[in-house]
Length: 101
Image 1 (cartoon, rainbow, N blue to C red):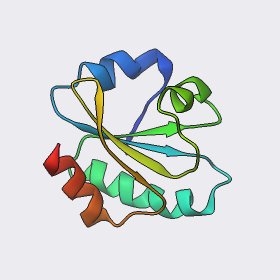
Image 2 (cartoon, one colour):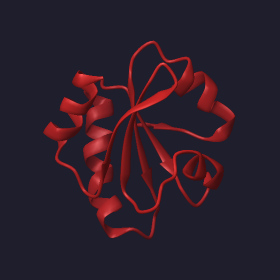
Image 3 (cartoon, one colour):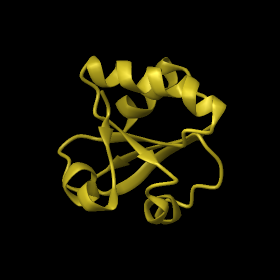
Image 4 (cartoon, rainbow, N blue to C red):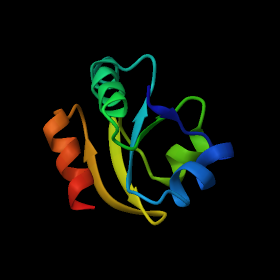
């Protein structure tokens, strides 16, 4: 299961992470997000560093990353955004984003 990222654990899980992390900004009411979710969870199960940000519950984080539509997928390295994709993405694309970080 992917890490649930909130303002409370953002510093520890994202900023202080020793490896790049993929953040999936999503919501329960978003159809494409529901299709993206299992891909993110499988990546987590396979050892990729991924986290999920529920935009309804973590509006401050969504604003910090200027999320305008969901799903938005952001790779963060050393506390800074290094890649972004908007809309439903294939697992291969997400893995490539993490590899390139």
